[in-house]
Amino acid sequence: MTDSNHAGRSGGSSGNDGGPLPAAHFPDQPAVRMRGPADLAEMLPYLLGFHPDDSIVALGLQGDGLRQGGTVRVDIPAEPDRARMAAETARLLVRLSEERDCRPSAVVLYLCRDPAPGQDGADVAARLRPLAALLATEFRAVGLKVMESLCVSDGRWWSYICSQPGCCDPRGTPVRRADQVGPVAAAATYAGLAVRGSRKELAAAMEPVGPPAADAQRRAFERLLPVLRREGRPPGSPEAARERTGDLLDAAIERFRAGADRLDDEQAARLLLGLRDKQSRDRAAEFAEPADLVPAQRLWRFLARRCVPPFCDLAAAPLTLLAWTTWLADDTPTTRVALSRALEADPGYTLAQLLYDSLNAGLRPDRLREVLRDDRARRLAARSGSAAPRGRLGRRPRKDRRRAPDRRRAPRSTCAGG
Image 1 (spheres, helix red, strand yellow):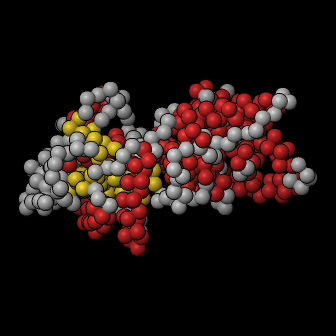
Image 2 (cartoon, rainbow, N blue to C red):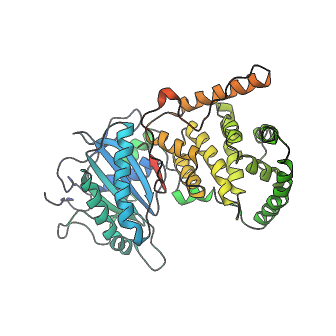
Image 3 (cartoon, rainbow, N blue to C red):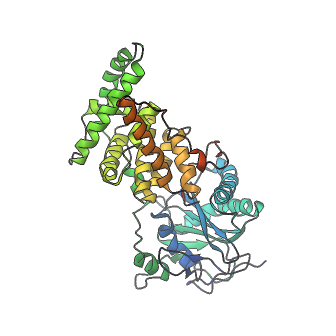
């Protein structure tokens, strides 16, 4: 096999393993054939819905026509972990693609990182070259052709595939020229797709608040914990605690529906500590109807930001609920980032892993919403005296179960459709 020929800086690659480049698919639009690495670099933020940073992105390609398949994004690991992460990323893309549809036949790799102070994009590309080589080796080891491997940094791209002397500018090629809109951007814009800033910007909106608000919230947790321990002593108190949490949830949603954007510190602490209970968390997930989504998202985002040190692990519940409601609202970029942050807060959080697997297996959230509607009907029936067994959001409906998902800790990643 020969290395690719990029036909100058505009990019006209056929990939190092031969064959055509893939086509981009946007809603209600004809497929847009990629002309080379320039188009592949321009497609990336539209593929994910945000500009990735400090990221490895692997785009699976399926069939003879190399149609766009599953996409996996993982954090760029520290150097001692890179060999392991490269192997895990290759296996992850194959597994998730097979669960969703079929095994990919090829892959396009992206390594994205902004320059550190004193660096430029060329320095970043040079430093990441060994990682690109590890990734290419591991993807080939699982039987996937590497059609292209790009570093994207500081608004420019570099190819790790091209070795043609004089072909690619060592200073990198602009992802988009100021006087030119590429076919990918034009098709995505026409299809109504938007890029929601960078992943760092999306994640920053979920960060815990800083002082002085953090200090006040921490004191509220510390005051409340002894009170809740005393309240939890009488027999039967778990159900009573769930009732109190449910009443707080109802009241908070009504306040946020009316335009509020915050709770006081004690209310926030009570809700967050109450959401440690999985049944209370599932009760919170019932706010899944169209009229609920906007106030619920604002509430979950507010609560996630009140999980200040040393209570950061409490963020798993509100971040997972935020991911759930943004998935229902078709805001999958935020869903991916929220799930990644939830699994960072608690790597073993089952509901976050369930949503992660469901999203990456190509399921629609409507099926899970039906489970919640059944849960709500059972709960209301029980309250009126005709109790029925409670369903659980934390497991797949029986009719939707495929093979059991791999419960080993996944790489800290967000995935786009596969």
